Amino acid sequence: MAHPLLAGAPGETHLLLGNEAIVRGAVEAGIQFVSCYPGTPSSEVPDTFFRLSPEGTYTFEYSVNEKVALEVGGGATLAGALTLVTMKHVGVNVAADPLLTLTYVGSPGGFVLLSADDPGCHSSQNEQDNRIYARIAGMPCLEPATAQETKDMTRAALGMSRALGAPVLLRTTTRVNHLRGPVMLNEPTVLPKPAGFQKNPSRFVPIPAFARPMHLRLLETLDKARELAETSPYNVVSGAGKVGVIASGISRAYLADALLEADLAGTVKVLDLGFSHPLPEKLITNFMDGLTTLLILEELEPVVETEIRALAQRLGLSLTILGKTPGPLPRYGEYDVALVAGALRQALGLTAPAAAACACGNDPVVPLPNRPPNLCAGCPHRAAYVAVRKVFGDTAVYSSDIGCYTLGILPPLKAADFLLCMGSSVSAGCGVSKASGQTVVGFIGDSTFFHSGITGLVNAVFNQHDILLVILDNRTTAMTGHQPNPGVDKTTLGDNPSMVPIEPVVRGLGIDQIRKVNPLNQKATLKAIEELKALSGVRVLIAEEPCPLFARRAYGVKRTQVAYVAADCAEAAKDGTCGDCLNTLACPAFYLEDGKMAIDPILCAGCMLCLQVCKNIKARKGGA
Image 1 (cartoon, rainbow, N blue to C red):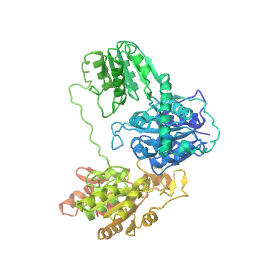
Image 2: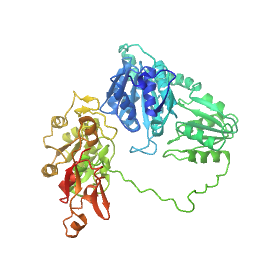
Image 3: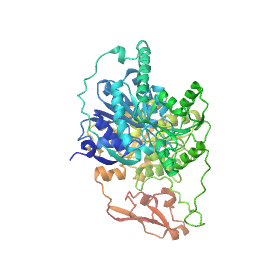
Image 4: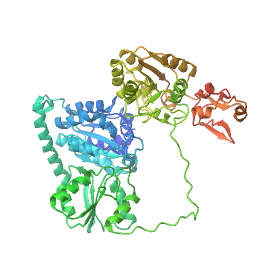
């Protein structure tokens, strides 16, 4: 039976993840082409498309990076295909070059870019606000706040893009991507087969003579989009009063809860701004009429606030506008109901409610214990880090990258000294080495290597840099959910017939100082690292061993043994024979019980790295 996201009947209601609702919305729009680079919080969107692709009528691909994903998607829409490209917010930085030209060229088949932003940096190196890209590129922007809206806006965005012949930005945030809610399904649209690319150089080749009129056409398209925003069903006015609130994105959901909890629903004038760019100036002008105070709710940057303040100044309005410039609202992190309720009280001139009495009496709240980030039990990255640090210790500078292996930042591994972006371990590491003469060891994962590490390695060869690059090849894109990359031999759907092996790629760049090891074999790994340490120039260590979680899913690998502490470590410590494996490996399966080291047989992955570090640890049979 076909999956409900593909075959669900109109009128049915399903409880969907926000990201699943995006998939259904695209299916209802008649989606024909999907490309992506996986990144949290967007990952479940392409993963769902991938999982359903054997049943679907669309073409799907995991691209090697976001720029390629956007270029492939751009080509598909130029050929007439209704196209969706998905990525997380920082991925749009990688894709920005083709994106800002595609808006000039246009999208005949329809093109929506999903940018999944991450306020609060839950899984990201920054919390940039990609609504700004909508302004830079000249793209209509829709911001859902519920699962139902996420499905409906995806469909609407794709339809709008096809009608306008222009790309549209669907901007979500972590809370929207990962919420669950009821979603009523509609009838899917069946589109004709893409007509193919229609040659017209003056429209599709942005040399300067053609780019200038392209820009004018883009501005005309934005005017048409503004008229759509003025009457959009996603821009809704409700309530009445002298105090008004304009809210966009997930802030609309927080506002609804705050009004409900304070019993203020209907007593405050509210504009839910779901279609936020181009700004519906007529609608907002009418909304502000008669207001004395306006509160603007939006996470991160004061994008809408700045535009509305400019509009109010242009109209000569004297109402008080509250938001971020100045407060009471921050320009960082996520909002929540309590924060919105506080801002709402300030706008209404109400005092803060008395603090609720604690049901637990006068006892102070006991804080939860900290849970530092850590690599999984059995992760081969831990083995690679232990070996590298045994050879280099604190004398080397460790250049890190984006992926699971960034979790090696904390003691005792201490294998991440700086990080800029995807692929920067190579390039930035070379910069440190060249500028300072310090010994640099860079770490990069297999997916990140294909994403943007190859170009940095080419640069290192060309400019004769001195760096040891450790490619941590765990045979999958582990951090974002085990998606395939060009270097994998298996995926969750079966064998990969088009595998691109890493070692020949590295050799093809002109590098011959290469060693390949299984990092769980510490003796061989230490020998390889010592050999590479004695050399200079560009050197590469390929540490290849599957992620144990992925190995179970894709390779059917089963645990056959577990580790246990055979000797009394406390007694061993007294006579100086203890290897202090707990403080060397920090494996999550290790724990202390009455001051003695122990290993949880349930958590132990059976990698047996600890046996090579401590003679007081042994192995015994144990299935999984």
